[in-house]
Amino acid sequence: MTEFDLVIVGVGGQGAILASDIVGKAAVNAGLPVMAAETHGMAQRGGSVENHVRLDCRYGSLIPRGRADAVLALEPAEALRAVDYLSPDGVIVVNTNPLLPITVLSGSADYPAVDDMLLELQGRCKRLVAVDADSLAVQAGHPLTTNVVMIGAVSSFLPLDVQSLEDSISSLVPPKTVDVNLAAFRLGRKAADTTD
Figure: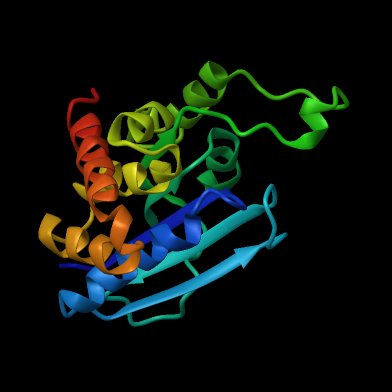
C-alpha cells in the first residue's frame, strides 16, 4: 500500500512549498497519484505555511486531523501547531532550530524552550526525529538548503525511492545548486537514519 499523508509546515521563506513540490513531483514520476494543497496565513516571510501532500489518495487534498502519516516541520513551534494532524502511529520529523517571530524578537512575547517542545511532540507521536537541519545545510554548502535537508530526513518514511526524490530535487532547484541540494538531501537522510 502506497497511500501516505504528509503535512509540511514552516514559516514563510523556509521553503515549505518547494519541499512539497519535491515530494509531489517524485510521486508523479514514480507513477503515484498525488494531491496537494497549501494553506497559509501570510504569503510573506514570517507567516505560518502549511502544505498537505497526499500520495495515492482517492479523497480530497486536505488531510483530516488525526490522519497524517508524517508531519515534516521546518520549525519546532510550527510542529506543535500541526501535531493534531498526526495519526497515532505517525512520525514527526522536526528541525530543532527555531525561527523567532518579531513578537519574540521585540520582547513582547516568549518563545517556548525547544527541549520542552520536543518533549511534548515526543509524547504525541510514535516516533520523533529531531534534526539540526540548519547545521547540516551549512555543511552541505548553503544555509538555504534546510528544507532539502528535511526532505532527506523524512525520505525513509515516504513510499518513494531515493532516486525519484533526487531526480525531483535535480529538476526543481536552479541548475547551479543541484549538487549542494543533493548533498543536503543525503545529509538529512543520514541524520534521520542515525537518530534513535
